[in-house]
Length: 290
Length: 176
Ligand SMILES: Cc1cc2nc3c(=O)[nH]c(=O)nc-3n(C[C@H](O)[C@H](O)[C@H](O)COP(=O)(O)OP(=O)(O)OC[C@H]3O[C@@H](n4cnc5c(N)ncnc54)[C@H](O)[C@@H]3O)c2cc1C
Ligand code: FES
Ligand code: FES
Picture: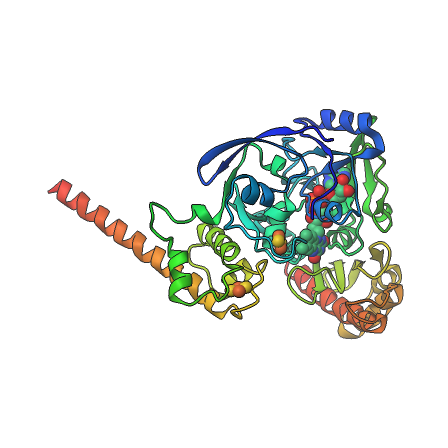
């Protein structure tokens, strides 16, 4: 399949890229990893007339702790997350997520910025970033602004990014002591999108009581969903089997799956329940040992 | 009509300079412009991995990259795996262990395995399976592909040990 014709440019700086987006308006799109955009162009689901390749822009590819935040540059590849010692040792929930996205070849190109900006409810980072209470930094003609991830996803392929804005970073507060998270994804085979996925991040007190829990769900709605009632229920409760089971039921109530090739809606709800249990259990274990 | 771009891409160590349409996919650049047909096209939908090449040493699906993106970068295709007429240990491994039947997936498999062994010369069986998880094979059932990669890892190991002991001997004889 040959994509429709387009003009191509490769700006060297962020301000150049923003100016090009201004100049070409709606007909232009950013090209990062290309792992969603190029397949969509081949199938004529996207027909940009102008592609602005941001891959040459320096300083958009980093993973660092700074000022109480973990900061991940928009152009950071999934493979960078997989091989980062900081992610491996301190943010296993992000490693859980990156390592089940697509396959090794796709992960060598696919970027974290693109994964969020694409606004696909089947993508895996959104639920994890919801659970981590992250925010994205968007840079446009009027400078930079920060958007909480929980306000970022507006609908299928629709985000709060304005036309002309580039997602340059996702950042999240460095979790305090006794915090831990986990992401569980059910997929039919390597490289498939999630049948369902569940991300959780919990903070415990000295007695193993949950001070805070956040639960994000993948691919069971038009956007990634936050299971608010499960989160409220867990606050102040011991993270034991019974409470985890109740929270899992509440998480399934927040889900709005539809039946498709990956399975009937009922099955997906059952899987949300099961994966929520597993994710909370693992998050609790990790919080206990942190 | 889109404006063409001049790209300079190092393919298997040789600089290639060509004018291309931006929408030209890397796989078509490799096959149709350069005539290197060892890189295959399978699904054409980013799923099967038969079009895998190394971009600056990292496996990517060349059906999901534009040639213009590779401007200024290096590509290795299956044609660049054998050196000086000598099969690479991976190629030997696929032959010795029957790592292929129809052979359609083989170039992509070898390039994924090549990058794996560069990064991790002593992979476990699970790491090998993980490393080739983006490459589909319709024939072999993967068993012999895994064995072929193990064969290559052992072979590379042996060669580098022999190389080291030769070096030691040279050192000894120089010292003597
Ligand atoms: C076979 C296959 C399997 C996959 N499986 C999974 C999976 O299991 N889970 C998963 O999460 N993803 C999966 N993906 C998607 C993959 O992770 C994508 O790469 C990702 O969704 C988009 O990132 P990208 O860098 O490739 O973005 P691109 O494809 O370059 O861009 C996607 C969209 O986002 C816009 N965009 C990109 N970057 C920015 C930016 N910095 N600022 C503003 N807009 C931007 C582009 O204009 C475009 O509209 C899969 C892809 C393939 C091909
Ligand atoms: S042809 Fe490129 S992934 Fe199948
Ligand atoms: S040998 Fe036939 S597809 Fe792998």
